[in-house]
Amino acid sequence: MTTTPSDPTTALPGRPPIVDLATWQAARDELLVREKAHTREGDAIAAARRRLPMVEFDGTVEVVGPDGPVPFLELFQGRDELVVYKHMWHDGAPHQGQCEGCTTAAWHLKDAVYLNARGVSFAILTTGRWDEVASFVEFMGYTQPWYSVRDVEAPVGRSMGSITCFLRDGDRVFLTYSTTGRGNEPVNVSMGLLDMTPYGRGEAWEDKPEGWPEGRDSCWSWRSDADGNATWGPTSRPVPQWTRPGATPVETLGRNGDHH
Image 1 (cartoon, helix red, strand yellow):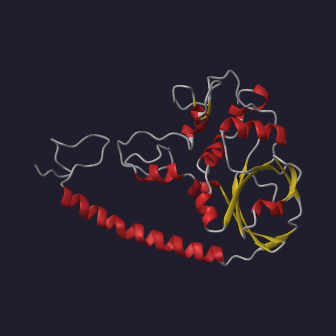
Image 2: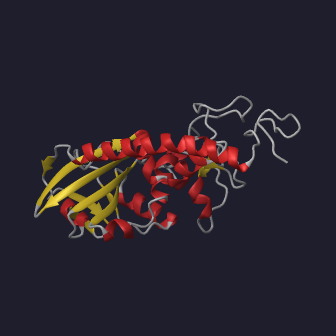
Image 3: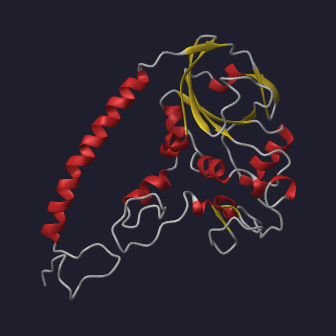
């Protein structure tokens, strides 16, 4: 039976209208025109990004990793380009008290083989003390390189919660690009996939049809309890942590066990 959006016998409240395949394809093709324009604009922005000026800095500045202090230049691993994610850090906090957004971003960046194949190295920087950072990295099972930039000035240190790109020319090192906030979203493929679903991210700011499920605060799902319920309560932790072996409910949350 062919149905239309106004067919009262088949309409489902709070759901997209029900139509035949040809009607759906026509609507899909109309949206595709806008999607292609969006893609072309993204390509134009990327082209402008490649033309940004760059800033030279001292590549011998030392960061701390599993083998102790090393010059920042070593993070390139002999390649010409480097992308880093700057992970926020709360001193003295238990694992479950670390930044849920940065934990989510790092979880989506567990493997850099495709970057490496194009001559790009990847590392995660954070301002935590190395002993605390090393424990967190071990617990999470991360395999990408982490380094502490606790006492390092910009552009290597500072501005956590951001993605930053660097270029190497021999022993000379340059800052080329940095972004934060929603600019970090390309590394979180889950966000892009949710944007393709009927209900989207389920966040209050989204433009959605009348009758759709009511949205919640941005990033509300980044913490959960052991049962997967989104919560910032005392037994919550960043969602990826629940996949780690032995991740059990906890009694404290946040800095030094404070609930916040």
